Length: 276
Ligand SMILES: NC(=O)c1ccc[n+]([C@@H]2O[C@H](COP(=O)([O-])OP(=O)(O)OC[C@H]3O[C@@H](n4cnc5c(N)ncnc54)[C@H](O)[C@@H]3O)[C@@H](O)[C@H]2O)c1
Image (cartoon, rainbow, N blue to C red; front, side):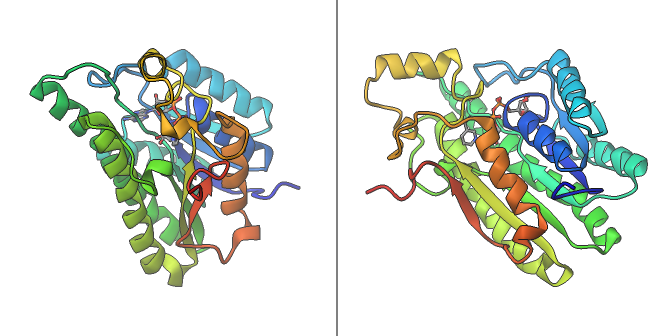
């Protein structure tokens, strides 16, 4: 018996990295999955987004873990695309219980940017990370309310949503601003949805072993700035967590074990946010 048997989870950014890991973990715990991914690159972001082949691989892995999945290509920046995907999935599975707003980007470019590039980075990162989180909430909350069984929403923020770092470029500043903005969205929703037993929380991972933390721009930055990259410096002896480490926290937060946990900023950060 899994911790979320018979429940249905909607997950954004499901084609690779943490989103894929969450889908596999929740499938193992008995959930069916509705998943979306953009499967196309974003111009202002220097590293590639997931591919259609990776989305197909997620489908295979979820099914191998014992779950059913409805996966489609949709961009969290476009509300109608998110809503259509959620509606189609709920139509298929008949309910919605869990929402993981996980899709995100972190545009970095360690060279002098033109003002157009600066603005493009800021706009891209806030559109995906913050507008996308709001779109995900807004497309899913009506289904959680209609089910009248409570529910759980988890937004993936970052240590950058708690501590003040992000460098001096549109991408890094927009990342910090969007990940902090998610906390405000979470807190307001947690209060307004508590009477309906819909819990809302954020997770704050330190660096995780995915494309976002290990792309050529990030590696270039770390090589040129030895000792930089404060997100890499955890008090505990680990440079990067694995996606499964974040999935473990998610599995707890969406389970009945956490039935009175709401409005919480939950670090999974090897002590990063607490360090002096
Ligand atoms: N990797 C880290 O070090 C780290 C640390 C803290 C927080 N996070 C956060 O974790 C979340 C997951 O990132 P990850 O580490 O798995 O990185 P990742 O780049 O491997 O995965 C992100 C996924 O989101 C998808 N995506 C991006 N833009 C999208 C859009 N507009 N619409 C739909 N899908 C979109 C990508 O295609 C990709 O599959 C992000 O919100 C990220 O900000 C990551």
